[in-house]
Length: 444
View 1: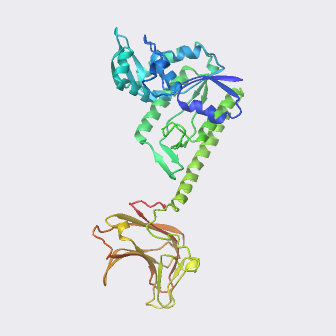
View 2: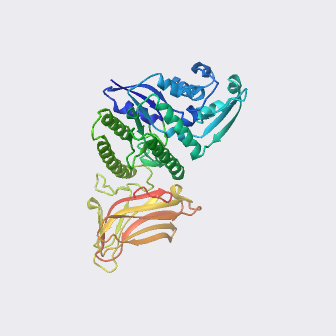
View 3: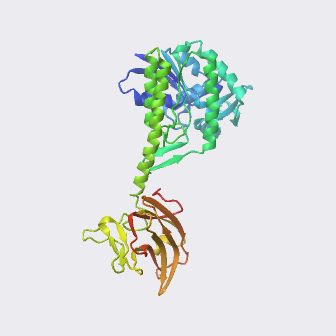
């Protein structure tokens, strides 16, 4: 069985969790929440996992990683457990650094993860382990970081030949799927871009220092998963990315003569896959949005009831004009003063003092015009808050408009949403109508 030691973020471990369903490989050691800046330093402190018991509610794996980060034993532990391959990434460099000052002027940096933040917030624990003071949120320069990368390369090459080392160029992504809410969620793009640019420089530097290592590059268009097992994070991806990494590992362990071209082709295949996945999810979420129960209008799909009537809508047509409910088609007569209207009353408490966006999914021919209107009635007085004349020129389209409703609107004000045609022989198909709070329509 081929064995691996892993040093990086959780992504490289999840490649085996998701991809290795037949248990082809064995992971011996895995460390995360620590980076080359930290584990290439020296420390006189020695903590054990049980030292955290009663202080912090952490899993044993987290205790192990935090201990190794503080004690500076990561590389020694990896070296003491030889494996066929060493799998690494540099994503833990995204964390800032914390300097711990011990008694006797001993000081060193640790990786400032959320677990280190918990430690430094607990003053009693710090005193119990001999930490006198600390400095947080330290960012090293690019030159200083590269100096630590040099030391990292020097040390791992003492135990691994370059052909045993696999560099996985994981990068954070800002765009994530949320299949529960049927939407995309985003991280702040400037922060993600800054992080990606820095990591790409350090990956390139490692490749120059170790030209014979195996390299797995990231496909384009990779998407994150907001509902990931480990929670939402810029490095928590959809399962297909881990399957890609595992397929790449299979190529490398197979020791193919054309490894580079096979890895490139695999990367291209998955780039196309993620590009199409994005498009598929856009459509899936769009369709789901049509079924959300937030449509202020009733029967927005204009479905016909069992009695053949159009529920919640009122038809008002002059001679020869008609609304054919089964075909969802509004037709005007052939006289000069004919008109065809469908309208629906809107409850005042749903719209009072709000911005409401009305969207219509419709189709007309190149000549016909469809009118969309909002009308308030108080007694015999009628006020149009909005009246738009629209044409789709023979193609099905959506049209949207936002209306500000008065704050003093009450139940005595009868508010109506109207769709009508008032020109001879004009007609329109009306597929769906939606009214939503806010200035953005989910029908787009």
